[in-house]
Structure formats: structure tokens, C-alpha cells
Length: 324
Ligand code: CP
Image (tube, rainbow, N blue to C red; front, top):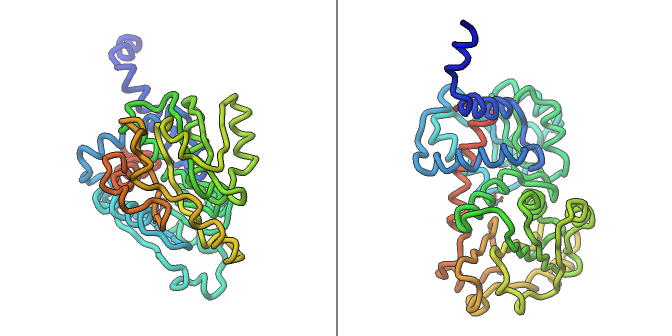
């Protein structure tokens, strides 16, 4: 009788429910915390949220958003995602209004907040802070950017934007331009795209080159990367141009920042012979690195990319909370 009962199950639904259950109650600190299969599952779920973003799936859930560093897109898209799912938000956008200003440690802050919430989203200037928080918290922790290290939810929305515009994640030629040293978004995206046989072109001033540890990561995977000081002659080969801001806040010497801040500026005139399906991405905010004359070019995708952040974060929140 038992075998007859079991044979009535649809294997694909068992498989998908196992995948969802594997993500339940886990933290997302590094993009490598997700397997390739889990990334694809999040991207597929994001598509569903894009079709219908208002669903009361987080009713009764409280999400804490702790931002120790400024943010517009990450914080507000998380909060928009939570509101559209019927959840509630506690937290701060300015740590000077919290007891951190009285000297409370990150350890004690996380311990307290994990007893007030079902999941914590944290942005912090210190590399490793999100991992530290995940080891203390009794609820899942999502890294919303830890110093120059990683920004995995940005990467998931970048992957979604790439798959949506290119129709695939496989075998793409990715140009990464600007601050590749301190740019946490390029670090996470490079690690993720390495799973789909991407070729990387790194364009950065000498002072802001891709750190050796990330180049070694690609070498260990047998992937090709090229480093350039200029990209005007090779821009026609790009499938994706991922522009980044030179981050003033990461420089201790303002003169060093002044030297490199305007080295790369993408202008509309440079895009003339680029591939028809090429798209320009930027995690934003931008300063000068994309001239506003690019904004009306159909190849500019950065504002749609930021909108995709709402749906992607809905998919991540539901997966880590084990909500289908
Ligand atoms: N992309 C991104 O992290 O933007 P914010 O700093 O505005 O959150």
C-alpha cells in the first residue's frame, strides 16, 4: 500500500519543494552561499514576482533593516518588497539614532534585533560584518553590502537583468569598468558569472584594479580575463558593460580620489558600433561615469535594473523564510 501511495507523488514538485526547503532559515552573506541551482530557482521566482508583485506572503513577519551606511536603492527596494508582501519593517537608516551611538557593540545589537524580527538585512562598512552578524543571529541574515567585500542581493538582481536582456547567462563577454578594487558589486557579480563561462574584461585605473584574490578565483576556474587601461577600441565586443562609481568614501586621501574620479566616462557617442543587444548596467548611484546623454539610449538599462531589485528581493526574502 505504501508503494502505491508514494508512486502517486509528482517527482518534480518534491524536487522543487526540497530546493525551497534547503534555502529556508539560511543566511545570504556571500554570493557563493547559493548553489547554481538555487540561483536559478531565485531567478525563476523573481520572474513570478515581476508578473505579480503584490502578494500577502509575509503577513505576520517582521523584517529588520539595519543600515550602518547610506543607501537609497537597497534599503528602499527591500522595504518596498516587504510592504508589497504584507510584512512589517523595523530598523534604522542612520545608526546614529540607535544605541550604537552610545557605544553598543554590533554583537549586542544583532543579538537584540534577532529577538525582535524574523530576518535581518544589514549594510555595514566593515568587511566580514555580515558574516559576523549571521553567526550571532538566531534568524537569517542578508548581507546588503559589507564594506568592499560583497553585495549578493545586488548580484542576484544583476543576474536577473542580464538573463532578461540577453536571454541567457552563458558565454557572455562582460566588461567591468571603474572601481574594481573597492567595488563590492563587481566582486560578487564576477564570482557569480564565473559559473556560466563568462569572459571578463577589467577596465580600471592602476590604483583601482581588480584585486589579485579575485583574479586567482577566475584562474582556479580556468576562466579568461583581460585587463585594459582604456576600452574605446574594444567596446564593440561587449555583451554587458557594467559601469561603477569611483567611491569617494573608500579613500582616506582626497587627492588620490581627485586623480581617478573622472578617468572613465561613458558617452553616447562611444556606443555607435556596439552590439545591438548590448546593455549598460550600473548598480547606481552614478556620479560622472555615465554621461546623462546615454540615458535615452535603448542600451541603457540601469534604471530598469534597479527596479528589478524589488522583485529579486521578494524572491530572496520568501526563499530564506521558507515561504512558497
Ligand atoms: N546599488 C546600491 O547598493 O545602491 P544604494 O547604495 O543606493 O543602496
